[in-house]
Length: 401
Ligand SMILES: *Cc1c(COP(=O)(O)O)cnc(C)c1O
Image (cartoon, rainbow, N blue to C red; front, side):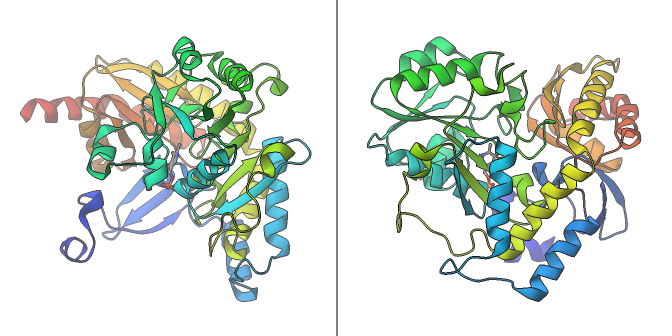
C-alpha cells in the first residue's frame, strides 16, 4: 500500500485490499483471505474469474497473433462484430466500431452524432457516461465535471425519468439523446416504465438520434443481451424501441478491455466515413477472442435465463430481509441496489469486505450488487443470510463516528 501511494496517482484513493488471484466468483487477497465477489470488477467479469473457456481463447490467440494494427483485420474481429450485431438484434445495414473502453465507445458515439450536422446533445441528470472530456460533458456529477471545465459544449441535462422535460428539451437542433437504460453509477436507478419508448418517439419526431449507453447494463447483465430488450425497460414489442446507437464495454470482454459502438441501420452506420475515427488497439485479436468466448459461454451455458431467474429470486429474498436499515431493493437481473434508510452504504461495504463479500457503495444510501453472471443461488444466499449482521455492524460503526 505504501508503494502504491508512492508510485500511482491518487485518482482512486487508497485501495481496499491487494488482490492476488481469483477463481469463479471468489477472489483472494495477498494474505490469503477469500471474498465472494459480488461486484465483478464493476459489472465486468461476466464469467467470473479464470474462466477456463476465456483463458483458453485468450492464451491460444496470444500464441497465434496478438496484434495487427487496423491496416489489417482478422477473422476474429469480423466474427465478433457479427456476434455483437446478432445479440443487439440490429437490422440489416447495421455496423460496429470497436474500441477499448466505455469512455472510448461514448466518444465514438459522440463523433457519430456530430456527423448529423447538429451539435446539441441531451443527457439525463444522474447520468454517467465516462471520464474523458467528451464523455465527461455528458456525465452529470458536478464533482467530476467542475475541475475540468470548459467541457465539450452543447450538452443539456434534463431531470431523470421526466418525459415532459425530455420532450421540451429535444427540438430539431438536437443531434442526439444519450440514455442509460438503468443508471449504473448514478445508483442503479431503472428508468420508469414507458420512458424509453417515449424517448424513442420524441427523438424520432425531432430527427435526433437515440443513443443507449449499455456499457454497464449490456452483455446479459439484466438477463437479456441488452437491457432495453427487457420489456420492463424497453417495450413489450421489441420492435418498438430500436435505438440508433448502443455503446458497450465492461462485460463484453469478460475482463479484457474492449468497447464497441453499434450503429443500427444503414443511415447511422454510414455516418462515420474513412479516416474519420480510429484507435490502435480497437478490435485487436486478443480482445476479440475474449469477446467471442464471453458471448459463446453466455449462450451455451444458458446464462441469460439464469440471470433472469436468479436476479428475480435474489431481489425478492433481499427485500424480504427484516431490518430497520433496509429500505428496499431495485434494479434488474444481476444489477441490483440495496436501498438503505440511512446514508451508511460505505459502512455496509466495509463490514461486507471484512466479512468476505465484495460489494460497492454506489450512493451514500445504496449498496450495488453486480456479481459475475455465473453466481450460484447458494453463493447469493450466503450474502442474503449475512446481510442483517452487516447492517448491524455498519449501523454501529456509523454511530461511533
Ligand atoms: C463504466 C461506464 C462508462 C465508462 O466506461 P470506462 O470503461 O470506465 O471508460 C460509461 N458509461 C456507463 C454507463 C458506464 O457504466
